[in-house]
Length: 185
Image 1 (cartoon, rainbow, N blue to C red):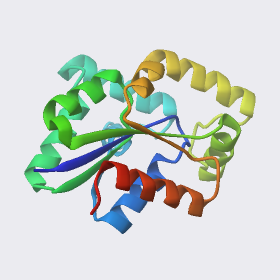
Image 2: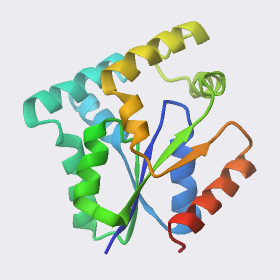
Image 3: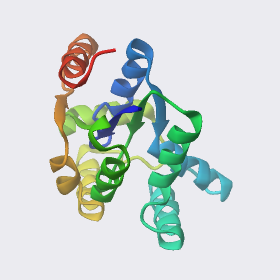
């Protein structure tokens, strides 16, 4: 039976860092929801901007159903016969529900978050195309996403929370504590 950790959280909160640590230190296999959307955006010949990613994501859900990307994740985990998997970037309440229906008690959904100012600085460092240039624009962009994806509901469906405002060592300690609460190995 597979053990799954699903990561949710706002942009720049540190989901990727948690995922990377779970892969490196705990032997988890990884699948990133955003990577699936980026792959399909590139296949359409579109630039990787936030607006294009949202457009492609919405078009796939409109054409194939709301669980399109979730089913792709489940299929990958099942086909690869993974024993431990981390799903990075669950955005919708339906995503949490779908993964819980599939994996039952074998999935733990974790909120990874940080203060907006910390997340803005991290995202600025990444330098992704189309990213807001000011903290004020970042906050406005985030408000739109929170409404569109119902993040408040998604974040309320989590099992545990990691607050990632501190150092890398502090984050790793929180991950270690999480693993002791969830399951070890």
